[in-house]
Length: 408
Image (tube, rainbow, N blue to C red; front, side, top):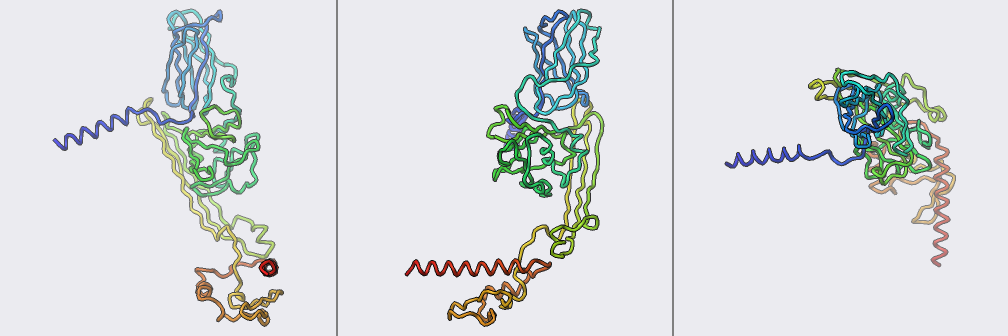
């Protein structure tokens, strides 16, 4: 009985989870709306209107209201054909139209009197205008993300194509980190922290500095929309851009791709900063690889889509830090013009030479282990470093005299 109770509890929980509706999220699907009229322009009620996805053959239907208006929400982005059917009228079939991310498209249909078995096919229609919403933005299609070169393959680089977007740090958009890093645009004068990034309607922003917490494989993105102003109330807590991306889904055809993008220092020129100080070119071995695959599980009913991207990067390091030269580690500061004062006697060290016996045990251990404090491995501008160190000593002495005078 105990095992039976556990089994019943498991199935009840499973059924409860299946009964729960979709998780609350911002809209990333499209909506189709319009009015159905007769040849005289009079609205027709109770017309069955069906929108059919041309890639999956999945359909969504509704009926017109008493005023002839229909609305079909939650349509995945893609190509659709709309049909209108009612007894006493010919079946009306629209031309193929493309629905985009978070779009509300108006398609008005006109029916002719006749038999339902007869069909009226609209060969062409006027361009779909954005008459239902006031938001300002632009859609970046999957074709654009596939065809434009992206250093680091970060889709957010393409937000800079939108009017009103700038960045003071273009290199921040090429980060290979899969985590909460990477460039974000400054939109219409707003800071980069005021943007919101969504994938299939779910926020992927980090809580720290509102960074991008997840960057999908570029080949997995169907398209994304960048709203720069007048976003609807569902996208609250944002003053900059709303970047709303949607992931591809499987279709009735098996489709996929594989890719490999590589960089090697043998193909790169040396950096200007390296050439300035005579430093060698840094080593670089970078591979970005992966693929996508999707198709039907059950034709016209269920589909799958899989995407993978891997990154391997081997480099000498992109960050330069200044460390003390070997002479300083041995107490030889003769290259510094300002006398260094012995705090125990108040007299300068002879020739700015400090005996290593005066070093603390911590300093001795630190300098003795290059893994803790590495030796310089490339040329640098030593004169600038000495001048900076020299100025710091002078400033410290001025500060000491000031504090001493104040104390007296």
